[in-house]
Image (cartoon, rainbow, N blue to C red; front, side):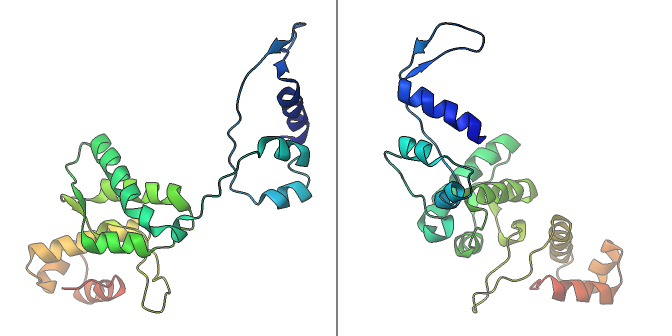
Length: 200
Protein backbone atom coordinates (compact mmCIF):
# COMPACT_ATOMS: atom_id res chain seq x y z
CA UNK A 1 0.00 0.00 0.00
CA UNK A 2 1.44 3.45 -0.92
CA UNK A 3 2.64 5.43 2.09
CA UNK A 4 0.14 8.26 1.48
CA UNK A 5 -2.70 5.73 1.50
CA UNK A 6 -1.31 4.28 4.73
CA UNK A 7 -1.72 7.65 6.41
CA UNK A 8 -5.37 7.76 5.35
CA UNK A 9 -5.95 4.26 6.69
CA UNK A 10 -4.31 5.24 9.98
CA UNK A 11 -6.67 8.21 10.28
CA UNK A 12 -9.68 5.96 9.64
CA UNK A 13 -8.55 3.52 12.33
CA UNK A 14 -7.97 6.30 14.85
CA UNK A 15 -11.15 8.28 14.19
CA UNK A 16 -13.32 5.23 13.40
CA UNK A 17 -15.14 7.08 10.65
CA UNK A 18 -14.98 7.42 6.87
CA UNK A 19 -16.17 9.93 4.31
CA UNK A 20 -16.96 8.60 0.81
CA UNK A 21 -15.11 10.24 -2.07
CA UNK A 22 -17.06 13.33 -3.10
CA UNK A 23 -19.31 13.16 -0.05
CA UNK A 24 -19.70 15.58 2.85
CA UNK A 25 -20.95 13.20 5.52
CA UNK A 26 -18.74 11.11 7.80
CA UNK A 27 -19.92 7.64 8.73
CA UNK A 28 -18.95 5.78 11.88
CA UNK A 29 -17.40 2.35 11.34
CA UNK A 30 -16.70 -0.68 13.50
CA UNK A 31 -14.14 -2.99 11.96
CA UNK A 32 -11.11 -5.14 12.60
CA UNK A 33 -8.00 -5.33 10.46
CA UNK A 34 -6.33 -8.64 9.62
CA UNK A 35 -3.06 -8.00 7.79
CA UNK A 36 -0.39 -10.36 6.50
CA UNK A 37 3.06 -9.88 5.02
CA UNK A 38 5.87 -12.08 3.79
CA UNK A 39 8.36 -9.23 4.17
CA UNK A 40 10.58 -8.32 7.09
CA UNK A 41 8.53 -5.68 8.90
CA UNK A 42 11.47 -3.82 10.44
CA UNK A 43 13.18 -3.59 7.04
CA UNK A 44 9.97 -2.22 5.52
CA UNK A 45 9.72 0.42 8.26
CA UNK A 46 13.37 1.47 8.04
CA UNK A 47 13.11 1.53 4.25
CA UNK A 48 10.17 3.90 4.36
CA UNK A 49 7.70 1.43 2.83
CA UNK A 50 5.61 0.99 5.98
CA UNK A 51 4.60 3.71 8.42
CA UNK A 52 5.74 2.76 11.91
CA UNK A 53 2.71 4.38 13.55
CA UNK A 54 0.37 2.36 11.31
CA UNK A 55 2.25 -0.83 12.13
CA UNK A 56 1.91 -0.24 15.87
CA UNK A 57 -1.77 0.59 15.37
CA UNK A 58 -2.57 -2.73 13.66
CA UNK A 59 -0.10 -5.03 15.43
CA UNK A 60 -1.94 -5.42 18.71
CA UNK A 61 -1.80 -9.20 18.25
CA UNK A 62 0.72 -10.87 15.96
CA UNK A 63 1.17 -14.44 14.78
CA UNK A 64 4.44 -15.60 13.29
CA UNK A 65 3.90 -18.44 10.81
CA UNK A 66 7.15 -20.38 10.29
CA UNK A 67 8.08 -21.48 6.75
CA UNK A 68 6.88 -24.89 5.66
CA UNK A 69 10.36 -26.42 6.03
CA UNK A 70 10.16 -25.69 9.78
CA UNK A 71 6.80 -27.44 10.21
CA UNK A 72 7.12 -30.56 8.09
CA UNK A 73 4.30 -32.22 10.02
CA UNK A 74 1.93 -29.93 8.09
CA UNK A 75 3.10 -31.07 4.65
CA UNK A 76 1.21 -34.37 4.50
CA UNK A 77 -2.24 -33.07 5.53
CA UNK A 78 -1.84 -30.03 3.27
CA UNK A 79 -0.78 -32.19 0.31
CA UNK A 80 -3.70 -34.57 0.86
CA UNK A 81 -6.17 -31.67 1.03
CA UNK A 82 -4.80 -30.18 -2.19
CA UNK A 83 -4.90 -33.61 -3.84
CA UNK A 84 -8.55 -34.12 -2.95
CA UNK A 85 -9.45 -30.69 -4.31
CA UNK A 86 -7.51 -30.87 -7.59
CA UNK A 87 -8.42 -34.50 -8.30
CA UNK A 88 -12.09 -33.57 -8.02
CA UNK A 89 -11.55 -30.60 -10.32
CA UNK A 90 -9.79 -32.78 -12.89
CA UNK A 91 -12.34 -35.59 -12.56
CA UNK A 92 -9.61 -38.09 -11.69
CA UNK A 93 -9.80 -40.99 -9.25
CA UNK A 94 -6.52 -40.39 -7.42
CA UNK A 95 -6.68 -41.73 -3.89
CA UNK A 96 -3.36 -40.59 -2.45
CA UNK A 97 0.43 -40.57 -2.65
CA UNK A 98 2.81 -43.51 -2.73
CA UNK A 99 5.11 -43.68 0.32
CA UNK A 100 8.08 -42.64 -1.87
CA UNK A 101 6.22 -39.62 -3.20
CA UNK A 102 5.12 -38.49 0.25
CA UNK A 103 8.66 -38.97 1.56
CA UNK A 104 9.96 -36.67 -1.18
CA UNK A 105 7.33 -34.04 -0.38
CA UNK A 106 8.18 -34.11 3.30
CA UNK A 107 11.95 -33.94 2.76
CA UNK A 108 11.80 -31.02 0.32
CA UNK A 109 12.47 -27.53 1.75
CA UNK A 110 9.70 -25.67 -0.14
CA UNK A 111 11.29 -22.25 -0.71
CA UNK A 112 7.92 -21.12 -2.11
CA UNK A 113 6.10 -22.42 0.99
CA UNK A 114 2.43 -23.50 0.81
CA UNK A 115 1.79 -21.91 -2.59
CA UNK A 116 4.60 -23.96 -4.12
CA UNK A 117 3.26 -27.15 -2.52
CA UNK A 118 -0.20 -26.36 -3.87
CA UNK A 119 1.14 -25.85 -7.40
CA UNK A 120 3.22 -29.02 -7.18
CA UNK A 121 0.23 -31.15 -6.20
CA UNK A 122 -1.92 -29.62 -8.92
CA UNK A 123 0.76 -30.36 -11.51
CA UNK A 124 1.17 -33.93 -10.24
CA UNK A 125 -2.58 -34.52 -10.49
CA UNK A 126 -2.51 -33.47 -14.15
CA UNK A 127 0.42 -35.81 -14.91
CA UNK A 128 -0.71 -38.78 -12.85
CA UNK A 129 -2.11 -41.67 -14.88
CA UNK A 130 -2.79 -44.08 -12.02
CA UNK A 131 -4.70 -43.98 -8.76
CA UNK A 132 -1.72 -42.76 -6.70
CA UNK A 133 0.78 -39.97 -7.24
CA UNK A 134 4.29 -41.39 -7.45
CA UNK A 135 7.71 -39.72 -7.54
CA UNK A 136 7.61 -39.81 -11.35
CA UNK A 137 4.68 -37.39 -11.23
CA UNK A 138 6.60 -34.87 -9.11
CA UNK A 139 8.87 -32.12 -10.41
CA UNK A 140 10.66 -31.38 -7.14
CA UNK A 141 14.13 -32.90 -6.86
CA UNK A 142 15.02 -35.69 -4.50
CA UNK A 143 17.36 -34.79 -1.65
CA UNK A 144 20.55 -36.83 -1.44
CA UNK A 145 22.06 -38.17 1.77
CA UNK A 146 24.36 -35.12 1.86
CA UNK A 147 21.35 -32.85 1.93
CA UNK A 148 21.89 -31.61 -1.64
CA UNK A 149 18.99 -31.50 -4.05
CA UNK A 150 19.38 -33.43 -7.28
CA UNK A 151 18.85 -31.44 -10.50
CA UNK A 152 15.20 -30.48 -11.02
CA UNK A 153 13.51 -31.64 -14.21
CA UNK A 154 11.50 -29.32 -16.39
CA UNK A 155 7.92 -30.21 -17.28
CA UNK A 156 9.04 -31.43 -20.71
CA UNK A 157 11.80 -33.57 -19.19
CA UNK A 158 9.37 -35.01 -16.66
CA UNK A 159 6.94 -35.94 -19.43
CA UNK A 160 9.76 -37.54 -21.44
CA UNK A 161 10.93 -39.49 -18.40
CA UNK A 162 7.40 -40.74 -17.74
CA UNK A 163 7.02 -41.74 -21.41
CA UNK A 164 10.25 -43.75 -21.28
CA UNK A 165 9.19 -45.51 -18.08
CA UNK A 166 5.79 -46.34 -19.58
CA UNK A 167 7.28 -47.80 -22.78
CA UNK A 168 9.86 -49.80 -20.82
CA UNK A 169 7.02 -51.28 -18.76
CA UNK A 170 5.07 -52.14 -21.91
CA UNK A 171 8.10 -53.84 -23.47
CA UNK A 172 9.07 -55.70 -20.32
CA UNK A 173 12.34 -53.79 -20.10
CA UNK A 174 13.38 -54.54 -23.69
CA UNK A 175 15.48 -51.46 -24.45
CA UNK A 176 15.85 -52.17 -28.17
CA UNK A 177 12.08 -52.41 -28.65
CA UNK A 178 11.51 -49.44 -26.35
CA UNK A 179 13.94 -47.31 -28.38
CA UNK A 180 12.14 -48.35 -31.59
CA UNK A 181 8.75 -47.37 -30.19
CA UNK A 182 10.09 -44.07 -28.89
CA UNK A 183 11.72 -43.31 -32.23
CA UNK A 184 15.21 -42.83 -30.79
CA UNK A 185 18.49 -44.72 -30.98
CA UNK A 186 19.35 -47.37 -28.43
CA UNK A 187 22.36 -45.41 -27.14
CA UNK A 188 20.20 -42.31 -26.80
CA UNK A 189 17.76 -44.34 -24.73
CA UNK A 190 20.59 -45.61 -22.53
CA UNK A 191 21.81 -42.04 -22.00
CA UNK A 192 18.32 -40.83 -21.04
CA UNK A 193 17.78 -43.76 -18.66
CA UNK A 194 21.02 -42.85 -16.91
CA UNK A 195 20.34 -39.09 -16.92
CA UNK A 196 16.82 -39.49 -15.52
CA UNK A 197 17.85 -42.08 -12.94
CA UNK A 198 15.36 -44.62 -14.26
CA UNK A 199 15.54 -47.99 -12.51
CA UNK A 200 14.63 -50.94 -14.70
